[in-house]
Length: 275
Image (cartoon, rainbow, N blue to C red):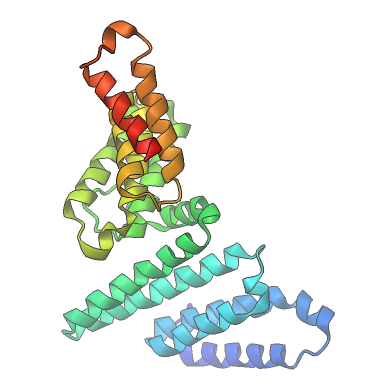
């Protein structure tokens, strides 16, 4: 019914399903039906979103997140689905606000939309690759460099391109150079809250340079992370990597004299690691 745009009828079905789930008293039965209970909340939220009932849709997201099963450490997929649903609701709400001439509200809703994913990424950084991979697969035009992207979409795009480059040797150089171009373009245009993902983007740029066989710019990006973003989750790793890459440039004493750029880079990376 939802996909046929019969939203009222679909809503009635979802309400009956939720009511039936609430009446379950046997614990084993409720556990067995948990997948259906979770799916019902997701679909009810999507139905309300498509109907333009945005507050009701967000209420379904809140209901979903409050479920003990969804809070379980093993249910990251359900939490990701909830965050993606919340994001889609807020994006649609922003589009609706734009059409009504409420541009200020639209900007706020779009910022709230990407923050829903940014919050999940910050709370569970160990699952960030899964978040990026899932978001990358949903992008309508990942190959279109002119498509507008929010901060989390940009990180997902760069992560996806890095993954594609690792799988396709024939397109490796093209894809890695695109990572660098996209990252540079984003950082040159981002402002305010959009710059919160700067260390993540610098890290992805560093990886691209490294895989292109460009150790010096790779070391410089990693060193910038260590110096400017010490609270970033991979800052310590970036600092060590920067020293290792710089040290490799000094393996040959003739290219690492006291005042040489390589020696200066090595000293700078050491300083970033130790301070």
